[in-house]
Length: 450
Image (cartoon, rainbow, N blue to C red; front, side):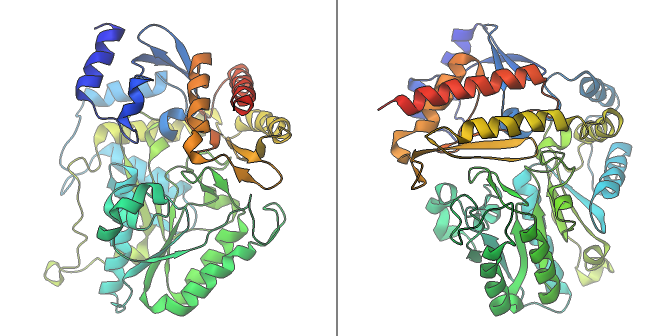
């Protein structure tokens, strides 16, 4: 099937995610034929730098030989089998490795198949635990403004990005949303590198007033990704852990986007020396090959469900593809690659490059801030730098930036006025240099336009 035929059939039958389909009248979807390292290669042979790791899932580049081999080896054994009442070596080994890496006392792994599902698991697990452990009044959840935890209804209910949730508001469960950190436009006039997370006072007041009805607080540690890669200090997590302990509230860490080395540490919580009660992981867990997610939790929570069957305390949550052997085998190989190839150690020169670029971009008259955490960086374009006033969303400057970057051979999908980088962890340094140069050229062009 040639390029044009793929596009024609796509436009005839396919409905794409997170897309206004009418946009495809001007910019049709681009058929990808294969991948090679940090590049996507189109059906016409054009090479595009995958600067966003294909929605943050690709850790080590496309068509990775070790992951290819792990997938092939497992496919010749068994692709899938029921996970209720049965188990298999890849799931067991993955669970062991995750528990060994995880912060704190996370010693139990519940498998699901995507990030939203892991969040649903965490919410239900926390809620049911309290129902069965003598605190049935704990039925509500706390999240922070501009949070994003997925797009199933439970996950949307604890999210704060109105773009995704506003239309569904009438059918969402009601919890508490508190103002979260906004370090670029800090209302306290402080800077994330030097503050003590004074903005945490909003969370303190909410838990002090309502802790008897709160089951858990859910948060994206260090980086609120869909909110525009908002980066906040580890001090916030330290305060949250202490507060949850004092009020008997679970701390749920959604590390779906930021786990597996994205922040420079294996888990984002490591920056704060904290550990959640439930840890949600997905995206990079299989290196971008297959859907898989997990919720790690403590033996204490696990024991809240462990009893004779007639008590009906079992956690009756299930997915058909729970513990899929193919996905688990890939995830095991991902863990081995981290250990055997010193992936985290190799981040240092790439992080330095982004830090050097940060100074360059931050000086631009239409960049309010370029922020960075680990190998994640974001450029926030503004109409007025002094007032920190962004471009009107109707102008779609970010989308126009995306179009111009594609013309130059880079996938830089925007978040409103924010252009972000979340490349594979092993992106070659010369490719990262080219990517940053493309971003600069597009920035110059976009901000010169009327």
